[in-house]
Image (cartoon, rainbow, N blue to C red; front, side):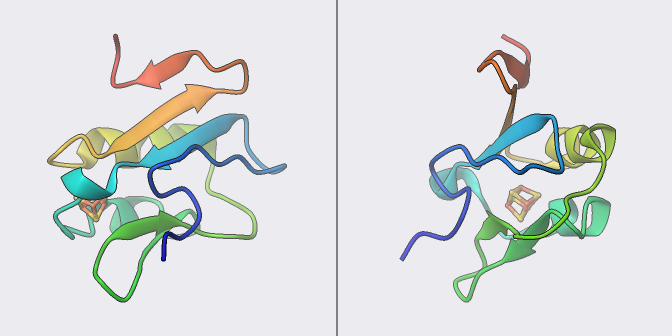
Length: 87
Ligand code: SF4
């Protein structure tokens, strides 16, 4: 079963960004979890998902997305403009 933010965008009242993890691209490297532990976690299959609760700062979430070796994390602003990866 898909968890929050997997293959679809999710947003959070605590943040100015929307996040999506593309499951097929996630290789369980867990770098996103190290970079932004309040935002990302791994599910039982080792695929990243987006946590409930207060997320990390948007700049930290962007850093986590940029650190992902497979570009599995997509970040948008609340208007749906893609912030990362840059188009
Ligand atoms: S850094 Fe990328 S590949 Fe690694 S767990 Fe996070 S989303 Fe998956």
